[in-house]
Image (cartoon, rainbow over the protein chains, first blue to last red):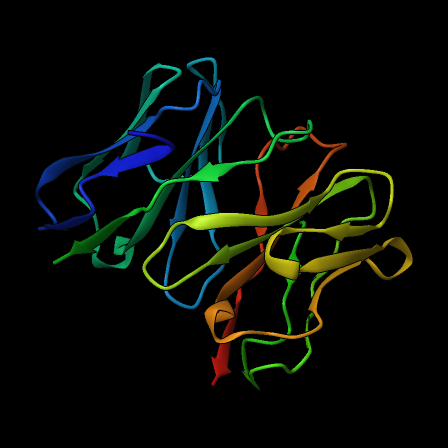
Length: 115
Length: 115
């Protein structure tokens, strides 16, 4: 497996459910990111991790809880979501934090539908 | 707050036509600039990037973009499009002087190339 992988690719959950999204990067990168892509809106940054430490939380509601156990894995734990949280959730990684000469590599995304 | 504007939301061209997609950003400091492409059913992929140096950058598949600092622009061009260029194109910016370490995206331009 190469690049950035995400599981599951599709997820349907009720508002009272708890689920987790998983991202894994096979590129030896140190920084990982969660983005949200909603219909007709720009991609929005959610969280940034560098060497497992969270460096940025873009005012994300607490019903989204990230976890980064190591530089290769990133999770997004979901609980009591709202229908407006339905979106494509993209994971990305980069060699170092953006701002240096590092490009971000994206995974295929998880299409989340909250019913 | 930083914003990235892509004024063309949907562009339809015939094969062999020339392409120019506009991208403007609002930040006045030092920036890194990117164009990403998302082909139908595929990941976001980096098309080209500008960090410093020659403001005319060349990317994959015959694309190029020109950074014009005075106009806060980073327009994407291709002299002759192909049907396989049908995709969604996203401009993205990183503000280098701030603490922000992730991409700010435009809303995307959907390009449809007709054979």
